[in-house]
Image 1 (spheres, rainbow, N blue to C red):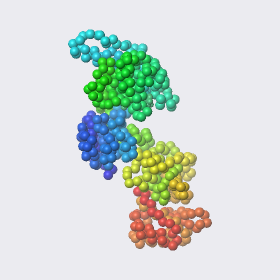
Image 2 (cartoon, rainbow, N blue to C red):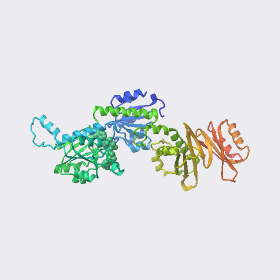
Image 3 (cartoon, rainbow, N blue to C red):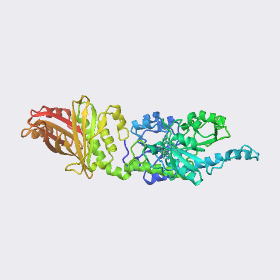
Image 4 (cartoon, rainbow, N blue to C red):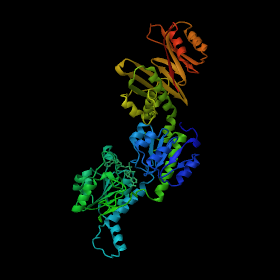
Length: 540
Ligand code: NAD
């Protein structure tokens, strides 16, 4: 059951979070459960009734965990990387995954800078010698970083902070970020030139990585890229382990082509004691310390607690990585339009007898200013809800639709006629035999269908609705009403419209009902002499 009050939101905190997160949740009326260090089996056992899991990086949210998480709506990661969460499975199960992308930016950038300095001056090796009683500089000749070239790969949040600090240390900073280059965006840091990867590798004395790990960035730095680097170059990695081909790096360190590396992250963590990179004097390894400062932990804890409360209590998903980004204010304005789109989807799915293969969706008038992708997701969720025996929501609707071969096309935009804003959707079925349309608008919080299959209407899309096509004779609606009345089914509202092609003499009626009529009453209405068809739709 989705939670309806703050006290009914069940949040399970699975990893150590700064206590400020708990205080923040309490202040919004949410009482979290805290169980850290659980095995996968223990976590699965704890899942029934849990709506949100809050994690750092220790707890792995695997597909097995997600399959057992029947009530789960949200996974909150206090931090940036979500590689401990199976995001595709979470998405297909309609679970929102959110992170706190900004909370540890500065702290991680500061670690990268301290690793650059430590590596250039052999600080850890010097400390080791001193502790062993060897007071000697032998083998510890350093490199001055002033005037050297720092190559930043990935000029996002952390990369940009590292670049600024590199400039502050009098380094010449260059960068590679294909996404910034592709959009023609100016470099986010003044004085930092964006170049292609090869050029950065060729020119930099120190390369620092700040790129997310995904299929296309795995082994971004392999043997070929290392060979392009200057002899004596150094690599810093505070992003993700899989970005570097570790065996290629070891070979280049052995040959002296690379002078050293400083790694906060490894392909496999924790590494074994014998891991060749951990054992080397020319490599500094730190145990994934990037976000480990008091300040960063407080930041991410507050952020994830606030985002969790906002998600359940205000219906706003901030920093969701499997939902399109949207400003909070935009999302609030969207509420009734999103409900309208979903109701339109439900309506159309019930109007068609065959599976839907194509949806043409238009936003008209002021509705053009709304985020169309969200409305499309809501419409799809409404369509799919009718045929699927599983949770469908804004997160998983596009995936489930494409698995079912439903194509979403953007229809023409334009003005909304006599309305301020309008949504219009037309569905076609496999084989092209059937097609239905509905148009709707919103007045404040009130939803209205204003056009159904060519007829102007004024329908409240809620509750059960009986739609009839019948011969256009006096008294037909009265007979239908009498048939329903005999079964104590009260009619809330009646709307009449044309029922067929001109000259056919058909009319239609949309009867909003208080209760759902039993099957035999529906059959009795269908069997009435003037009635050509009678269909019941449920509009929630
Ligand atoms: P971000 O999303 O702000 O920036 C990532 C940047 O990488 C983007 O600008 C993107 O365009 C760029 N990029 C993507 N693919 C690229 C490619 N092939 N080549 C070059 N650039 C590419 O992310 P962020 O907050 O700066 O975090 C960066 C990384 O740091 C993430 O992997 C995150 O997991 C990691 N991180 C590690 C720690 C730690 O504890 N060591 C802490 C925080 C973040």
